[in-house]
Length: 183
Image (cartoon, rainbow, N blue to C red):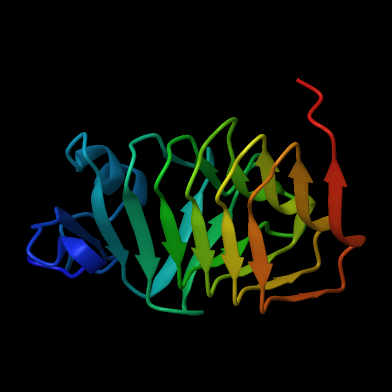
């Protein structure tokens, strides 16, 4: 499928579709990410509640994880993070990420030195630690999200050159916290 990415308008992008009802390529989000080529691609997640017991790991660069809006729910069923970003150039959008009343620790955990990560139009809630946690990153964009009922809405740890704009951050223990890198 040809998709437009600015100057890459003629680039062909690997696409995987996840659907609980079997109408996609996969019924499991992690399997779809694992199936992408090493250069990344798009995982589109249809509506439904996807229960996650060990977190979703994005460990390939240039992966887009896109849901169908608030009705695409990623729900933690065991203690841990909802989504672990461990590569640069990732895009996460249109997902409802539910920590399941403190079963989850961090909604989206952006790992050490990942750059150019974008989180747009997500619902991130019910995590005991952070809705979004960043660790020595640069170029992170957090825009248009609803981040609520977490220990902290967004935590920046040693992160720079990043943008937070147009988010609704409410009913958290703290809205946005910043700390020097401790590692």
